[in-house]
Image 1 (cartoon, rainbow, N blue to C red):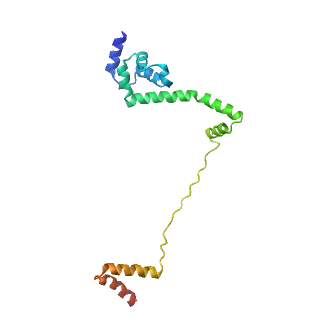
Image 2 (image 1 turned 120 degrees about the vertical axis):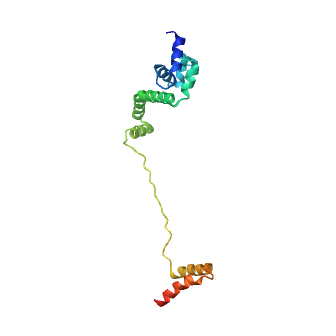
Image 3 (image 1 turned 90 degrees about the vertical axis):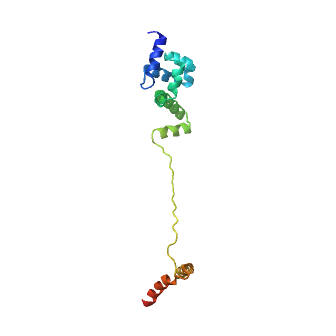
Length: 157
């Protein structure tokens, strides 16, 4: 199959499936600075058109594929990073020792949170209650029957 025919077949397949071409393109895009390649060169490496690559880059599926490959690249390099941290810690770097201990779960940041809940003083003295009743009586005005019934009940008891 000629290169152009393969591109046409790939374009016909669309982005519904993760093809080998997608994986190839994603591998290059997951490299720092695309491995030194332009988008056109990445497309050529994946045996697709640059236009197809641009279409893929707009899809969630392809973006996730690239991100997964980036994550895998980071995981592959972690042992080297940890080794460098250990060497710096052994050379006396307190920051690197602290980082190493945190990575191993031997040191955690302690955060204290103190919640202060202010509760209004619900206990009222008689003067405060009488003042509130007077205020209510003024608001009620001519409808004194409502409050007077309360007052009559108090005097009868």
